[in-house]
Image (cartoon, rainbow, N blue to C red; front, side, top):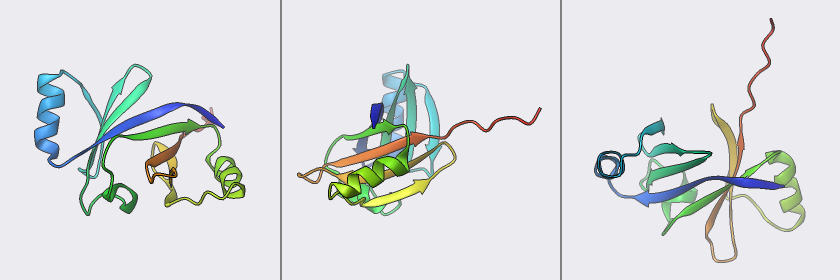
Length: 126
């Protein structure tokens, strides 16, 4: 079911200020940016993200008080079905994005856990 850590994310209040710190001070190279509220940095095989916790962010991130973990899964739908049978209901998603599909669940202390599946490249018709 879970294969790896897909990404970790820090909630922030000011994207410009945080990007300046992480990029100019720490030297991280920006990767994907989604809607101005989510900035990713690729670090080896991992991804670190900054998420502005405002009305722009999905509801499940609005009350995040700390770091969020995302677990990479091989089959999001099958994982969600297995978790549903164990009494776990997503608080967000599943949702599809250009690079991935994801859903969000909570642990018993309401910590946010993202279940993440990278998009598989389409086979070319050569």
